Image 1 (cartoon, rainbow, N blue to C red):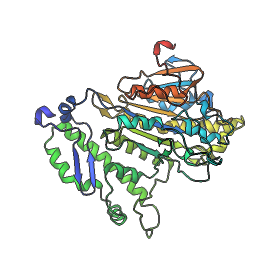
Image 2 (cartoon, rainbow, N blue to C red):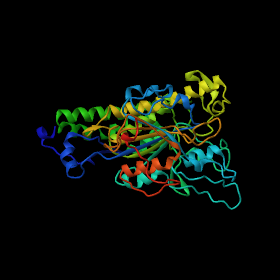
Image 3 (cartoon, helix red, strand yellow):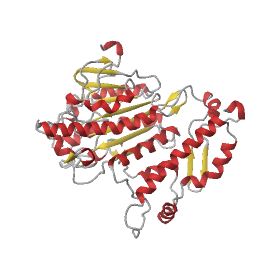
Image 4 (cartoon, helix red, strand yellow):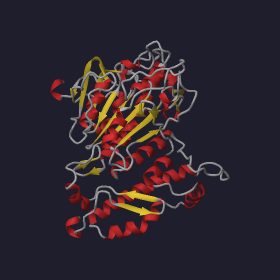
Length: 448
């Protein structure tokens, strides 16, 4: 520790090499420097989207307040009991039709972080316009001092043609930098990795590195060794564990990039994606975990399933397409399949939350200092209803949220009220967002 080595490091200490810059996690030796700058860990926000609503009796707890029993959809969160809240009764009424021709799926994802109605550009004279999303409002404030203000990810590959009206970017992203500029979500792990640690040279150089199984960490090995020698035992262990996690993630990316014919020329941006949905999702979440640990970014969004998704889930015994299954017409078998898909998506988010819970961060864990917002822009996917939306909030955001509760609000309470509340408690006060009518009451004394 620093009282043994007498070494004090800046929070922004970097390991630098050719084509690579590796930020460090919080070490004991940084604490004196941190005390002079901040009194608590920085807030982190994550927004995770899963499309087509839920089968509500498989999602909504039967009781409100504390000690609610986990429903089938929430069972993957069992190890996190008491670390999250479930909110019901919230709606995005601006996602309902206004007779302008825009599609229900388009409006669902467009309204999710805006509370704003998405208009149909196919009508003559109508401009593509939405609103700056809550994640970007937050990134402009809490992310302004981090190297990367925000990261936008997806594991449901964007595509043109699979949208019910207007422009496909309404369903291919949930993040808008300005009312006219969407942030397109990235599905390539290597692109995210290189945003965090450097571009690593040309396509040919990158291919050579992949073939040799070399690491981006090789270029900072000497500096890392020198730094480790100057640290106490606790910090050396933390540094080694962190760099090992970076290397492990990189190896998984390299493995994905090797799949395919050897004679295909590697482009400037490698296109390797793990073959399985689960491996892809966990890899993307692990990259985000590293970004949070090193304070490279404080805001992210992730699309687990996009609106109108044609993904199938044979890994859980469901060969049919997600979107088609969501139109179950009250068929018991299709409803069961939809519920299983929803539970599977929750299990992917639970993976991230458990990793965050088990990652020390200052005086607590990453989960203690973060807020992860999981949900959908539809409640009943079969009927395309944008009311009674599924919402889960995990993490305490530096004590700004109490967890372990089920809050059930008056029907059609604006979801935008929750977004206003999240921003306010993250240190980004805003009077109004979309159709918000004020902050959402999150008072444990108001529930059972």
